[in-house]
Length: 204
Ligand code: TYD
Image (cartoon, rainbow, N blue to C red; front, side, top):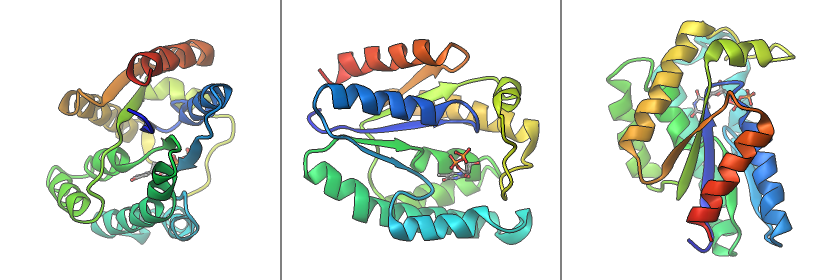
């Protein structure tokens, strides 16, 4: 795996962004210049779409429209940021990618997962080389949040987060070759060590 595309996934507040930053530091220490990015967002157009997704009231978009918006944002992110970076030989580390749509939008109704998958193969057609799923009890994640979020995703509730956690664990079983589950209940340093151990094995 010369220039890997790595993603971090998990419930809200699992500690993804901290781990994205520590992995980026690790790559920089090895004199690699990773592209650190995130979804929704990660390119100018996708950041514009992010604003449509996070602002407004909860019922602003139907699940179907949300899937289209997340996928449109991802297509732009892929075209404008991810693919050029990989082509230039840079490692890409993204805070969320397509697995988030599979789980968050797919968790709404069983039938929506099919829609997500069809749109993904039509418009994205690319999986990460390696995905870290940071697994954590949603009640702990909620208690860790210092600043309550003030956007469309703020009041999804504990039951929804539990369904999302279950969804990510199921996804890890569905894609065992690329998904690695790490225990997000450990200290950030221990999680970072677990992540770097996997990187050492998979991206020597
Ligand atoms: P994110 O920016 O990761 O949240 P945070 O502000 O905590 O860092 O993502 C915003 C929300 O969007 C989050 O609740 C997860 C949700 N989301 C989806 O529902 N589907 C998707 O495809 C993505 C990428 C995110």
